[in-house]
Image 1 (tube, rainbow, N blue to C red):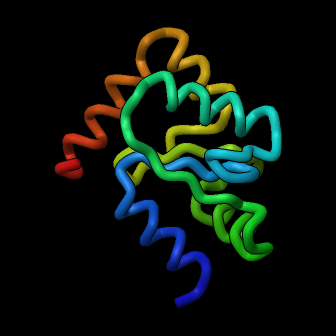
Image 2 (tube, rainbow, N blue to C red):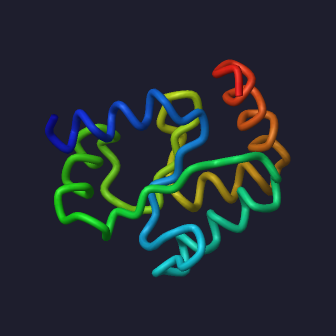
Length: 108
């Protein structure tokens, strides 16, 4: 299975998936840290994939999302956006319901 297939499988399987620079515990950029913090505040389970862990991840991810920057957020298998959009959704109170809906649809 190539990297794109692996990422697409993870996107299908994880109801709330963040692609970040660094891990959930040790983000490697301020944007990734800010997005992780938003999801921590929501308090629902989420998964992270570190795009720095393998050089093949970032180009495969860009092919999937057609979005050049990281972090990237997928809810219920759908690309939501990057850091700025996710923080805006959270500030307006719109992100948490989307997260809960994605988790409920997945039976999580």
